[in-house]
Length: 167
Image (tube, rainbow, N blue to C red):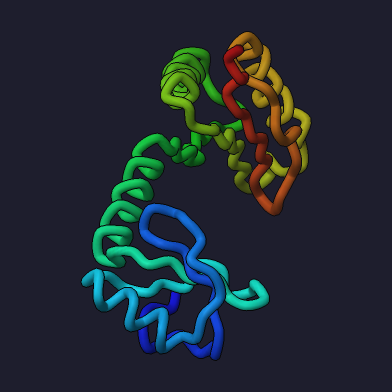
């Protein structure tokens, strides 16, 4: 936003601090009018023909704008992706522990990237990893939607789960 002397247009449409239209006038006249009231002339619609300027306290306006932005940021929910790594020949107890971690991440509202890491000859049997991933999806089916189906990427097989939207 341009204020006071930064306004480049020759003529501007001016509105008062209360919102009433004061008409079209030269920039220097509008600046003089704003100075008399100890306020700033702020360009609010630079694309208008002629540009629209408002007489206001710019410092107060900027402060309130920052307050609104801060309040909006508080209400924002940041979703991050948490990762849980499995092996294709994982034991039941280890599976349960990692599943519990994935469940915790889902309940916190995060997405979960479930990864199966293959080493050496395990890569010749990717179906074993797919079975483990599908078992994870089946265990959590009431709480998650599968955002990305199991897919082999290099030596890892990856599946992404996201929390189901609550109505």
